[in-house]
Amino acid sequence: MTTNLHYLIAGMAVLLVVLWQYSHQRQMDDRNSLMFRRLLTVVSLDVFTELVSTCFILYAPYSFGVGRMLSNTVFYLFQAILPLMLLYYVCTLCSSRVISTGTVLRMGIPTIVLVFIILTNPFTEKLFYFDSTGYYHGPWYLLLYVSALLHIAAAAIFVAVHRDAVSRRNLTALLTVFLLAAFGIAAQAVNPAVLTIGFGLSLSILAMYLTINNPCACMDSLTGLNDKQYLLRRMNELTDAHKAFHIITVYAYQLDHMNKVSGVQSGDEFLRRAAEHMQEIAGRNVFRVTGKRFLLLTFSLREYEACLTSLRQVFRTQPDDEQAAPSPVILCGVVGAEKLGTGGLVLDYAEYLESLAARRGGTEVIQNDRKNRDSFYYNKQVEQFLHRAIDEDLFEVYYQPVYSLHQQRFVTLEALSRLRHPTLGWISPDIFIRLAEKNRLISQITELQLRRVCRFLRETRRSARALRTSRSIFRRSISFTAMAEAT
Image 1 (cartoon, rainbow, N blue to C red):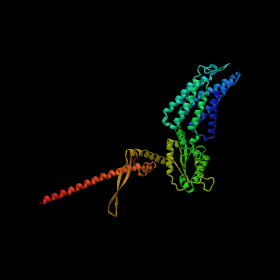
Image 2 (cartoon, one colour):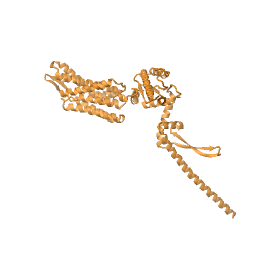
Image 3 (tube, rainbow, N blue to C red):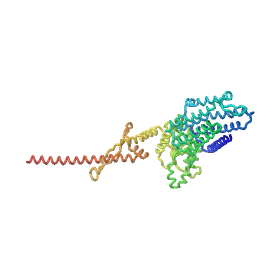
Image 4 (cartoon, rainbow, N blue to C red):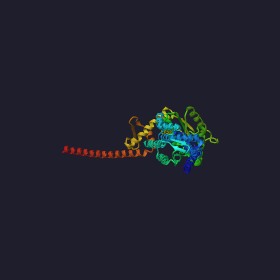
């Protein structure tokens, strides 16, 4: 039993360290992070109640029978609930979709049955019981181990089915979690005198915290804001849940100029001060998307308008004001951002709107409307079609002759690239060339067109040679005919 207490104390110590560190870090509001917090809480309570119930069994006198029965029943309840919570945690990690109520109930039926058995155990004594000599296992004692191992197996199958939605790093972390939890359960099932379940669970929680749910992993080191990775996960969850949200991006388009003129340290100081101002406005719903771009997430039109007004005041304050963020920015607002679809499309649309700003050297505001949204969707269609056009060589070349007034003749040809979309029709070169440069496809298009031009020149040269040959034969035939007629 001394070994049992050592395992439990070690597991409790690990959980206390994780709880202390996690509680002092910036909290995240996505479903997986919320589920991790609940799992961390329940695992901590489970190990604590196991420690208390073990102490009751070892040291409490027989007169404390009610306390022993109550503490052991509460501990068994936590043991029954934990495997189901682990399964829910895995579901939130592998999919951003909200689990339906029907699915939750179906997944929880075995746990509900087990909870009923635990609550009625003081009368049936099927799981455990106490007598004058101590604590004893009941005939159905192994149900807890079977339930836990089956839930872990179900979680592993769910991960295998949805492995494409999970990064390799997270897959490795989940495999570690499953092995640690399963090893602790199996070891205690083989030898009930060695209480390793709580210790295995505490190590599993530590593995989750270090690899998957460490808030520092999704935090920008310079500003302390959450990063793009977490933002995309958050927006995808909101979209899948059909929850409305609006965004405002803050783009410091003159940051490079500031770094060149005042130094990189001045640019970093501006970013830190800007982040502080935005946190005062929107709290935790501020993210650093790229080196120059921040994003504020709002959930009502009133909040959206208030944030936009405050940002205008902050970034339009004169540079000599100590409370100002002394650099012009582009404020881009998107109302009803969930209608765009995925978080990636939302960020692409915001970047597209920013590209429409005049950038005259001051802070500018641009907001979405139907015309801009239609134009964005048109550009996205063209952008997607560019890859197919390159793979299938769908670009066309039109040759425009160049006439020299000085030489009074055509001196060269200008090769013009053109592209026709199956449904959109002719695409303006200004559009597809700009998109090709943005996606670094311009060199591939140039190579394709150069090959077309070379083939054209080669075929034209052959045609010209054949034409000269035919003209020479024609002239010779005329001369021969004239000589014959003279004779």
